[in-house]
Image (cartoon, rainbow, N blue to C red; front, side, top):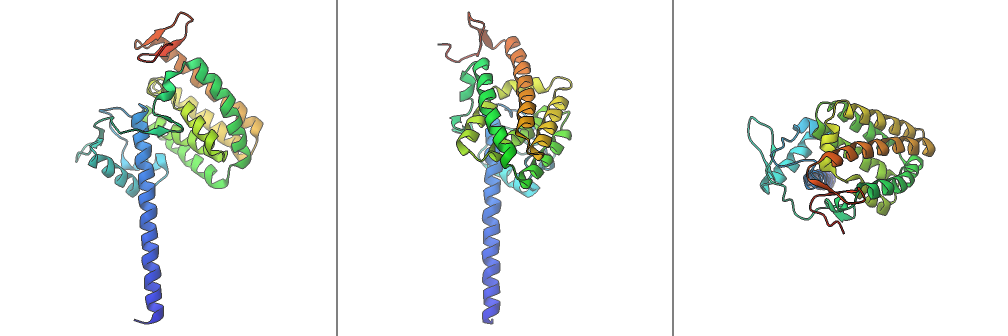
Length: 267
């Protein structure tokens, strides 16, 4: 074998190794995303996972990557893969999962008024920065996520999977890792209840319209328009979540009228 041939062979081997590392890295990211969705209550025990094609579209990755992530979760008994039927969530004990800064569902210990006020303060700043800093690659991903949402208008779980991708991508575009993590925690408030809210007729369609307006403002790099679009979106999320909490039998009402999730410390 000539020196050039050996060099070409070595380069090909290094390239193949690098590709394998990248694939494993993306697979682990998708695996973590799915665990986060389980820990936050978006995906619950007994739920059927969307198909590989739908998950690949929702996460904007390959079907091979999704398949590897599911196999990894199946090996840990978190999901159950059956031939001829959809993969199901087998257990929700996914270990300690950090979402943003706090642990999964830690944000749920706060009352909705506090969380809503915090979202308005923090997210206004984050999305305004995102409007200035967002790049074409992120905008292209957002277009893919919204396309996935339009294909999931009759499936609240599929929609929420993609919804999280939209919000996280925008928060990261602000290029402030700390504020991004704080905002991700705020976004995760009462996601288990959001399943019910987005199941209401027309709810997903309204969210898609909101997201489309937000992305249009981001594409125009217009901070004022992005903040206005996000305010509309966050206020609608607040109203619909408030209705769910007010009618949920697992919540109780404090004398001041604040609804606190069942099992949290009212003091």
